[in-house]
Image (cartoon, rainbow, N blue to C red; front, side, top):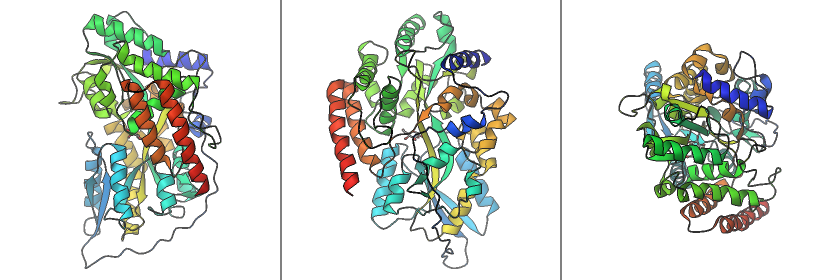
Length: 458
Ligand code: GLC
């Protein structure tokens, strides 16, 4: 553990990333955390706090939507809420698809048909602009006061802010990490994780061969939101980008993006991974890694919490190392995609006050700490990064520090879901070899420029 931490620190120092002393993050790092690039905002309050409409004398019945969770910690917390509020509020968890895009489609259908029955919506970090622009969720600027916001990481608050208003409350944050099998690398004669994509390929090939492991590297290559995330990470770590800094122009058609998608495809061509990677989502990659069938894996922090759990994993924490994602060459900075989930109130909920109570419960330091300890979900509550128990029990916060400090958001736009569909399809076609990387980024340049123009006209 300390060995990994040490090697990352060395690399950080080489890149001039300032590390804090005893605490997890310095104040400046907190400010940076969550990625730069979102516009500064003024916070205007506009939300009303109407009373809940309840039929009869029974408790208020709330519906909370979220995808499946292997850790079991959400189930426990909802049960605890129901016990605490017995006779007043009872919440039922509506399990939504694990695939963020499918979850979004289901919500959109309900919202467009008049709102549906969900009261509290868990939502991906990429949704607030679209939720807000369409009026699908309540403006929480008044309820989620400036003082309360100050308790969360700036990047996480920025991510729920759009058009000067705050639409949700941060719940947990995410950053793409490079997991590796420390024991297997050592067996193959490697003492450090790779710094460049070429090194990763070489190490993955040799280690897989020497240790008779099925996959050198697994990641998320399917045509869906996670495939977009992975494609963007390849692009960013090759020095490319999607939009210009001010968001006004599409810049994806660049030699860097071409090289990025070429690297991604070469994972299949060079035998580092299997053809099937083009249909892999988080679950397939984590299953392969936890079974002991992969040397390297790109995935989110929660997978660390599943290592060593009975039934899920045949590997233990001592065998696993974590690093930041590799880069194309040493002069390029590592980036990982900002992920995470937030809590929103459906604009047509009949029970906004009870919904707000559930949100306050779930996002409180105590519950955030429980999610970190039980499920390796990264908190958005600042003080928890100084918490000794978390520092000791959730080493992913320490081992993943370089990645967590270098996140970038996906484009922020009410049209993001269209952009995502376009990127998902082109990145996946390039990975499958159905189109060339050149053609894929040229197509995206055209399609996404059209989307920006339509957004300007709207
Ligand atoms: C994780 C991230 C989310 C991302 C998704 C992609 O759930 O938190 O932001 O969109 O993975 O699969």
